[in-house]
Image (tube, rainbow, N blue to C red; front, side, top):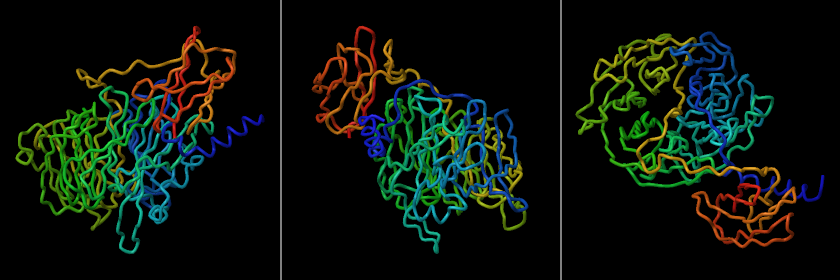
Length: 512
């Protein structure tokens, strides 16, 4: 290997952590197939009567339940992704990532390093919405996992403290003969004390990018990130709603049309916001005090985005999101009927809920039971919504676990200032592989190395907002390499466009 190549390899390895949060590069295409969110994974590892993994498959419409023999336990955290044909790609319980063959994915171990994770290593993390999987916006084979764990966990008291950061992991499905491998993992993207779980995502108004939202502990501060083909922007912050002094025990959800965001927590009850898909900002805050003696809470929204369902252990409530007075619109649509299985005290109470691809809402229980509840007509007001208690029987016992999927099929908002995409910058005649930037990430001097005798009529640098930056460019030797002084640029992600009579090449780099 040539000396320059060895130096470049060493620097790349050294600088790898700095690169990870920005390795979201040029757009190609992204998946929108119906199968991406069709498969729900839950249950325990196999080995005892009544135990084992359960899959619920919605690909053909009605839920198809299956027993699956796998090593992974799901305590509460569950995230998985399938391809457009509904075939499972990979999944996680917050402790490690398994591939489609139910084996440990290459480099998929040691997620969320902490004492809490070590404590629950055999069971899976006990965090609702603790993991979120999003497809890449520039490569159909790349996926991003956003996740968190808990620090300062008191095992004797089973007391949860707080996560101090939101982490990021990248999976490449082209590796290991299509079984996938983890390329980067556990990279901090928000370093702060956050609430436990409740990570949610919504499509930007352009119908392509993703807003990711989470909440700061002991605060009314919301953090948002924007995932684009050109990088991960943010975090942005906003003060909205009430102060939250302790986390956990709740669920958050965006409405299917992306116009509303709801949080329901055990201690702090119900918060309702309007959501601006253009700016990622919350507004029109409304609060409802439920006054229920609940042991577990959840929330979901009807397919038409008009009716809100709140679960409170013994009750399911319905709210009209269009009502002028939120509290006065509340209707009790179900009261726990006392059913228990396999035997008391394993009550089939109401806990977390999720809108499925069949247009129905499914509710799990806070106990180890093989039953789920179903809201058959969630677009219908009042009792016409038809809550059927313990109407879906699972092949194995499940407790706590409910996956989270954002609305992958939400399109552009239409009629807004940001509903159209910027013109994509694509290479024309010249090949990207003919040009290389080194070192990348860079702190000062960046070199443009060419593998051909091409000459450039113009070299331009843009930031992630498409604004042209002024940087000194010094030609060392025409047709071989140029030197760019990046010291005047603020840290972040940039695009370098090289233009000639043959076309143009666009490369990306990170300024540390």
